[in-house]
Image (cartoon, rainbow, N blue to C red; front, top):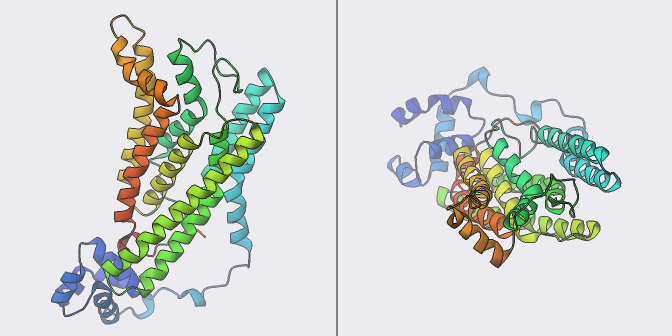
Length: 354
């Protein structure tokens, strides 16, 4: 025990409670079987002894109840405003596109995209979806951009187009698909709520569990439940926005993209950035490759390059490409998340912006 305390002394001195030590021990590879060698039934019991045996003196962090009480409703109201702001600004941009034409439409589109990006960046700096890393931002922008412009470009490329640049409408020479992007922007608020439910529920499970296996078994249904809740909210928003704009709801590609982005963000927030970045990059590359092979197939002698994509489009339509790419990525991340986000180390207490 003395050797274990010496190796993890910094962790024990910084810990606010035994739960943080348990999560840290699991992150270092200790299991309930390892804890049995120290005559403890599980890692949680071992962490409690380590927490009790390491002196803290005056360096103990101030308890939550000793801290000044925040103004009621202040941070929470700000968080709610930031969560709904991307969707509100995106809806305003869509209305502006519908009411404008020509050069003003291009200006409205540029201002709307910039406003939504800034609002989303501000929203992602706080709350349960906040993260210090931005390694997935470029791939996320590509995937959302493809949802807006990719299907129209793919449809025209198959038939020999496009014959012009996008004009912001669904009937132009390069059709723009607005419904999935608007629904995704509006779904940011439900995503924040689902992430909060998952984090709060996992912390409660961490407090009541008496073993790592017990904790994982109790958190896995919570993860799947919050994921299903978000998917239901996104499906409803797709139906509402499609009906309001008089356009197809584009459920397959939008649902798979929403699932992919939510899972990638949850993994990033909980410290598993590598897998999220890798899968997002692979998905974006698959979509880009599908477009590239269509245009490369127009070159003499390279017609076979575009055959697979043309066959997929013939069977499933242009939506088949993003649905397949995002769907495979989402399933991969869901399997990975069910292993990683159900570990106690993924929920170690950290200081977050309220």
